[in-house]
Image (cartoon, rainbow, N blue to C red; front, side, top):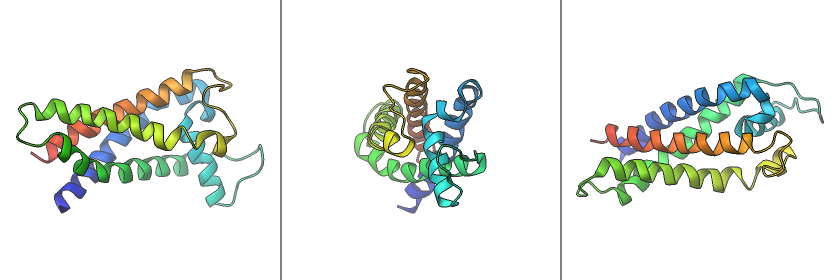
Length: 159
């Protein structure tokens, strides 16, 4: 059981780090409001640090990235147990099933953790975002990337 937790932590660190690297070019293009997760983390982090000022808060990238990594790792700790159920070792193509399970997991995380909280936290609608559908597409595809990597790395670690 401890192997599953350690695998989740390692896979989560790697998957979230690569997802973050994937989002950097879009952040450079659109700024903090263009990366949905980062925007949420900035506001949450600002509140935690008691630096939140209405419509005028300082961007703290260390806090944004730390919260992003923490969230990704916490979500990843559960994944090896979920993955075990759906890609049991007796299946002939465990790798493919693990990757598919990861993709579904990434999409579910996006649907359950980002969709319902973005507007209440940031005040910006995902569907009617001032930057159009770009941030939604980047966030969704980032979670697919995260899930794909999570499934693949977890499977490698638990061979």
